[in-house]
Amino acid sequence: MKQQILQKVAGDSAIKKEVTPVKIGQKVKVHYSIVEGEKRRIQAFEGVVVAQSRNGFSSTFTVRKISFGIGVERIFPTHSPLIDKVEVIATHKVRRAKLFFLRNLSGKAARLKVIETRKK
Image 1 (cartoon, rainbow, N blue to C red):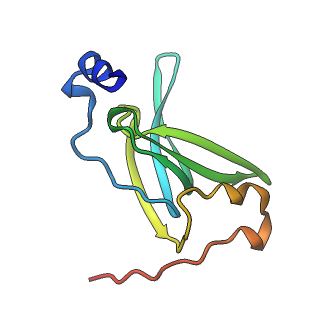
Image 2: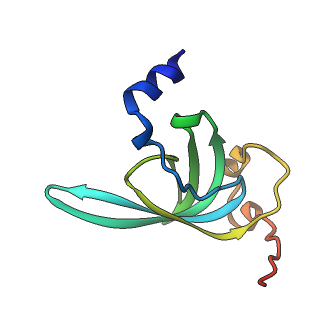
């Protein structure tokens, strides 16, 4: 019910046609627009995807990074017009749907194993 109302209000123009598919455990760089007064600039947020919520139009993904020794998480709406692009940097081997256990780990313990990808 709620989803149908959101769909009617937002219309078809709000849903992005081409969305970069992100998976849990991928290291991504999200380029998003920041509006400061009348100026617009694009800033990158690079980290590991720790959670994903798939709810159609209101689907989101959470990216976690370590900034100056402090863990920072940011939730990005998948279909947001402020997201310029999403680059997948690396894919890690994970066995969980949510990687919230990374919040309690630090240093080498917080590393994930990288899956080698073939370039054709």
